[in-house]
Length: 580
Ligand code: CA
Ligand code: CA
Image (cartoon, rainbow, N blue to C red; front, side, top):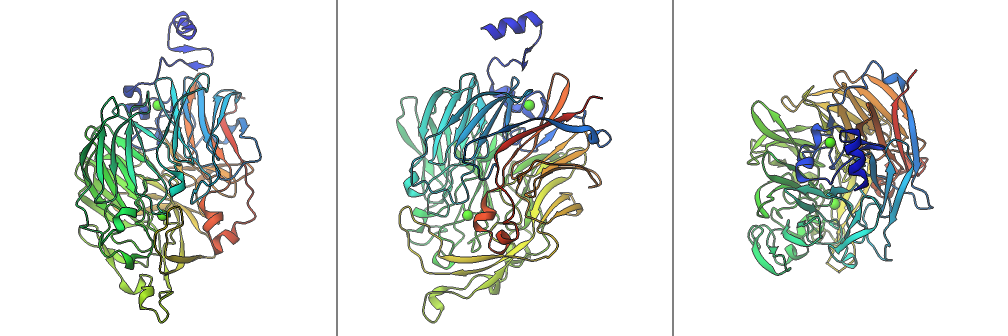
């Protein structure tokens, strides 16, 4: 009430502290990418392009980009900070490690409130205690927690408005992805592919948290829809039971949707990536094991799978297909690009899933000889880890060297797409692994791999490489290499810039056309989160969460040793042009 009076007095939608929002609407979210005064979705637009139309900061004046403020997430709890902040009405909402959420004055860095979720003992996040961001709807800010819950907080007070359990953390479910809003529904994914969970996408009423539909991403499981009273009715099986899975393995089949999804209002489809099939030992589950390692396009209105595209059928390397599917216009078509963990970049028709083009975006791929005309991998059977049941003692299959490593040609760090250059900016990594299979059986709440591994470097000079890739040609137009693996995301702007962070602690910018590095700043701890930009009171701001962690120090083998000097942290950094 008070705010709306102030807004009326100044005669516009601006008041002290920034633009006033009466409440975030579906329409606001659908045009998020074109409104630089706010950031209302993970991906800076639900399509996930991470492109800003702002051009106040350019290749020419970026030398004057200096810190505006820094904010500590505090506490003894640090670890990986993989979050993309949101900006609503001059407030920043940023999640942090250990299921925390901070509301900060976006202009001054002053804390407004903080929320710390009470986590039980016994949570089982596979890959650090991270969180990748929140969703906003109406007066709420909503995020997922490591014990597989969803929490909706009042944007002004930080008070809990609703809390819902997604699933059972004791069975290995957890949640780290940013939820998205599509057609007025809150869409969420789940983590736990290393524990034999069943991946799915849930749609909820964002105002109440009540379920509207669920769609499993393991073939054979029933989908459901729910009425306003919470009564559940069947909404069709995903695929056909036992078509691509032997025996009962589909019941604990993985395909976790742990990265969350993107949504394109032009197609009405939400695109969720599904992770590895469980267990990792592929000899136990002959078949394609749908919809593991796939992009799954879901009609948001019905909760049905409209199409899927499987990147790695019968995966034997943990090549989770969870990477973001980013839609864009090209040659009169609506297409989607995906830099898959398996090392290939895929371009698909966003309406139908038809394969348009595929090409490697990393230099070393051993597990496949290439892609066929339909985009299916041409396997090299000699490079699949061996079947332990065929070994002399039945306990360990043949060890193979595979590239990329299971941490992928690309992992959770989201890429960006610039409609100005027509390039995708992909944070890629060059590494491999020794991998072998072992016998395993499912036990609730226990790791369900049937595999062992050691990650190896493949190049003495670098692991990470930020690559500008032309999706029309498959050509790498430029690259900037990095000693440590890249683990943060990318931002690109109308100002002709690309921003990204490094584990060594540098937030960097390069000319989007040429790849010439034009700016860097050391934030004092590794960056594993995607940068953002927004405009407030006529000034363009750049922000990034900082804090080294994530999967690399936990699982990185020889690579973890190479980066073990890097320090943890937990802070938010914001920059703007210095006024002389
Ligand atoms: Ca916006
Ligand atoms: Ca996995």
